[in-house]
Image (tube, rainbow, N blue to C red; front, side, top):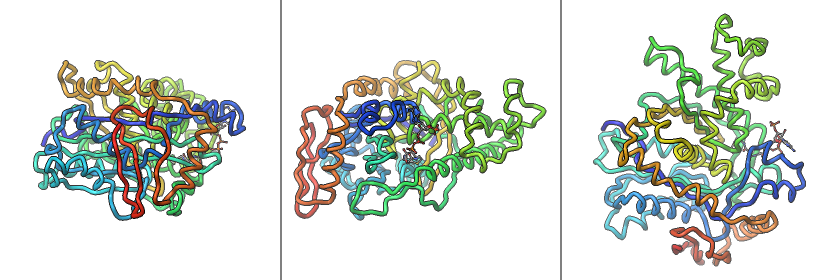
Length: 453
Ligand code: ACO
């Protein structure tokens, strides 16, 4: 099959959020720490009506309906998540409730997990299936979702919640570049979830940042090398090769630092004699070793300044949802793709090369790229995806604000009820977006039932 890539995209975030300025005041930290220091404006969250199954049911059914995809057109369905409520039964099997009534049970795939990377692992599997001898001509559907919550403390403002559904098939308007992926996989205890009785991760914040940046360094250098091997005659890859660069976003400030880091790597890869005048103040850093510079404030500050205009052009547009909802974990980097598509005019997006860096603690990471189609005519694949996403901005604005006190109580009640059965959720369903699935009950046998608004 030709031009294997993304044929449809749907994003979902809960209908309530907490304002980060209010959270700063409530937590008693200095004003600006979460909003300026972390770069976050609002944080979406789930009350007791939503769980990983409902998030996935919502986003999947919305995609099928919006694009009029028939259940029989899907031959592979895989969920990437780190929100585990069952150690055996996959979320994918729960989603089969949307297919079984139509007589469709011949659908490959099961769940995939490693922190925020599970969605990317699932996506790579979907692409591999479409390109393989097992492919039967149908679409692959990748669903990534999480409820990202942290215990009380400095990580809590970096939570979020949401889901994404990505339809993969041939002749796509967003085409994955073939033979061009760079991965970095390692063993690290930076962020992990060993406590089965809690929704919260065990986090070493500083180590997780170091791991993230080091994985980025590795993937970027390797991606460059792979391009060089593939096309030896061409100029080496730098940020100039990309029209847009997307990152997994734990919080937006880390993404800006990551972009600056790539500019720093480009600078280190430039022979001293070819360093442009605009970089002359940075020459003193030219002999630096990447691994010694994760927390160098001088280098970080200088390259954030030097790359600012480029960041605003290539990455800032992709941070709309990340800034408004927070870290959704597995959907995060793909919410970046949605944000990009709704933030620029279609004529500016046509033909773009988009770099994508996906990171999941523990750790798994990959950098790969896709190319946006050039056909921008009405009715083209690209224009269909973009117009289908026109609801996103108004839904972000249509959410309702919850006070930090009530937010904290919602999380405390989730803690009390974690794995408690039987359980009947108490939160109102009145403000949910139309088409949202919600939990009605967990019975004595831990079986969950859902209804739809
Ligand atoms: N105005 C403006 N900026 C401020 C203010 C203020 N009033 N107060 C603090 N800041 C800045 C700080 O200078 C710092 O910026 P800098 O890093 O550019 O210097 C930033 O705000 C954050 O402040 P810190 O004191 O570093 O924050 P803290 O250590 O309390 O927590 C952390 C940050 C570690 C990221 C925490 O939120 C966390 O553990 N989050 C979860 C882990 C995570 O997201 N890791 C990232 C990769 S792994 C993943 O995806 C899960």
